[in-house]
Length: 213
Image 1 (cartoon, rainbow, N blue to C red):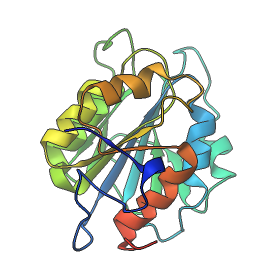
Image 2: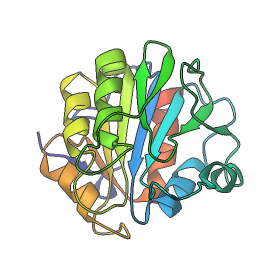
Image 3: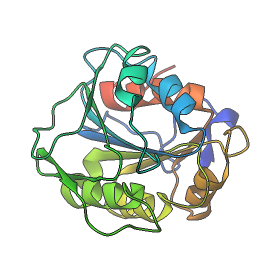
């Protein structure tokens, strides 16, 4: 299915057809790599404190890097932002950041951290996170692929789409690093290709029921 580029239309189309009623979404899963921190901050800025879905984010970092992502991201959003904990209960309106060198997986109502093998030389893996979200939440999930190099996230995004979820990619031509969002688009499974400045507003419309302009 060809993606709709939202920059050419204001109809808020999902898979080519505007939804008649808002769908319930429980989880928004976001993957980013090089250049992704700026995209994450831009995406989160417009989201309200009472955003009704949980958000899980994998941002690739070097394994030896001491992460300050939670502190940095907290400054730009009304949502609570925290490092993910093993067996933590998943709550709406909370942003859970993957820890360096730990895979972040989403189970029924809980998070899991796993120090299992690298995937495409990466840990945490966006693909693994997306696949766990698809297996647990299916059509009640949204996948977002932001700026980054290589192709992590493309396979997992396709899994979420096949499970009935909604998929979004940052416009590759406007991303700081286009390889990762372009790989997602190339799967043919992206519903919306958006400038990063429009993704947050679109998530509000999808998750909060405001499907009008």
